[in-house]
Length: 134
Image 1 (tube, helix red, strand yellow):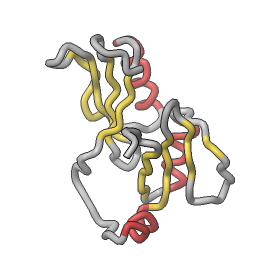
Image 2 (spheres, helix red, strand yellow):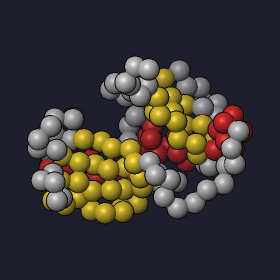
Image 3 (cartoon, rainbow, N blue to C red):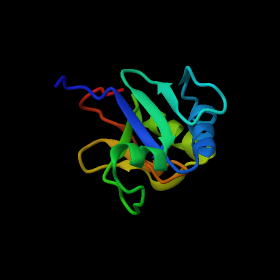
Image 4 (tube, rainbow, N blue to C red):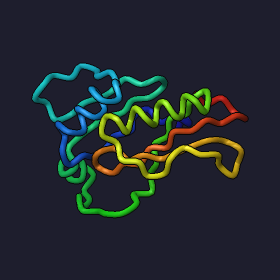
C-alpha cells in the first residue's frame, strides 16, 4: 500500500449545514459539485475532503450510524506561524466552529488549538517550529 491518504470523508448528519460551513465558511473549493447532490468533494493541497450523509456512509460500510463522544479522529491544519494559527482559528470560529481549546504554547514546543465543526468533528490548528507541515 502506498503511504498516502487520498480522501477523508466526513459522514455528516446535516449535509446542507456542513456544506455551508466548509465551502462558504472556510472557503474550501468544491470539485464537480452540483446543488441538490448529497455528496461533495473539496480539492485540498495534497488530499481531498468529502462530505456524505452519515446514514448512507454507515450503510455502505455495513456498520451502525449511531455513535457519540470522541471519535478518535482529529483533522489537522498546520500553519507557517503562530499568528497564522490565531488567524485561522478566529476565522473558523467566526463561521460557526466551536472553540474546544484556544491556541496556546504546547509541551512539545509548538503552538496549537482545537475547534469543532458544526457536527463536532475535531480540528487542530497548529504551528510546528521544528518541521514545516504547512
